[in-house]
Length: 444
View 1 (cartoon, helix red, strand yellow):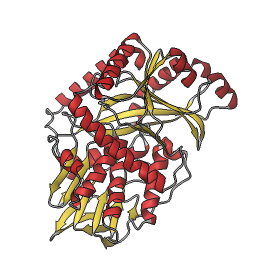
View 2 (tube, helix red, strand yellow; view 1 turned 30 degrees about the horizontal axis):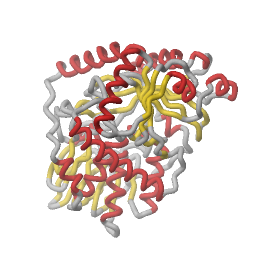
View 3 (spheres, rainbow, N blue to C red; view 1 turned 90 degrees about the vertical axis):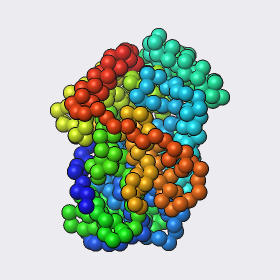
């Protein structure tokens, strides 16, 4: 039997979820059986459940979540589903052409899967819209990054448009950015709205969903697996583990996963006068020219007209960040916001939060059959919306022995390599991230 060592704990409120009406989920309060069990109702778990419903209609499929749908990392990201190369651990977005083409193909399969769900569930453009993204540069060094990225995309045969400073001001309302690079393949989502709709749609299709029910033990019982909470359990022949970095808490991939937190702030709703002073278009999303810089989104819809700032990373192998640490780190968001939007003097942040990422040292997923009939869909390397969707979808296909060549490609990835011992990894990872953030300059 595996006793789960740590349960999820996320710092600050999940702002995207806080904008939506309160949700009451059903708790697991009995001992039940199922044909399939998915642990974790984030992007990976919901994709796995949806794919199982498609492949095994009539089977009893159970999905169990430690918190509420939209409260965990699935509702805490910046809401970009990115199709093109995007390595947070790299100095740029450029990679080897062959591996980048493979990643693009797989990322687009995930975005298409999410897009099909959005169409089937008749979601609004606020929840999911394939509108592309902009990488933006504020500095001369950032401009060079974008120029290099443009040449790389050109070599890959990918479409892009270069935006000058005037076009960037027309888009964002601010003069902060000197250059931008638009690519059309990304989707923008309201992450909590999307995953909640995905969960509700799956329940309507027959899924048994249990929220606020953390799994504390996983054990083999004959030829089946039993996942236990404090007072109940689910027994099933096969399990899909979609808990990202908490795979290590279940005893898998020990000392092979890097637990990183990133941080974000969301403003109060802008008033009519704020909107006039800002200008620009009502909704847009910007990724920084430097991967360690600041991501910015302007959103309009449920909850009003707001701006989201995301930057800073910390390596925290305990999978816990204190409120004091969160409050100290998010001061950088105020500086980044004021630098970009001086015309919005007086606009304050309403929500501050952190979200867990899981990275491997060699940038590969923690995917595959890790024990008999336990299938991992973990370690999304900072791209939870896209890579999580992909891993969940393909884990369901692997578990059902569905013939999809993308499964073989996913399985062909190397294993996550072992990390150096602590505290060496803690000192090294945090030192490298601080150095890269400082080097990002105006992009931060």
